[in-house]
Length: 82
Image (tube, rainbow, N blue to C red; front, side):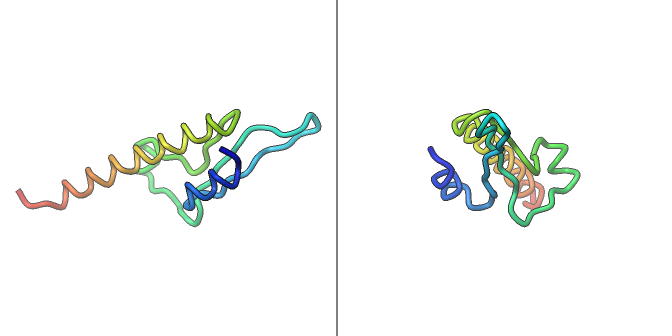
């Protein structure tokens, strides 16, 4: 995947690539317009993730999606009557 494809697949994130004098660097993603709560951070969600290449960044973004889904399911379960 290239930068544009990753950005299209993950619209809730700002995707960019670092640069140095040596050339292109690591890949980064920062959540768009979201501040995470202490509970979310404690559960493993991160405001910014990075990877050495595009594939590694996608792995991190998928990991974040799984954590977010688990948290949402836990929150839904807490709100249900028993």
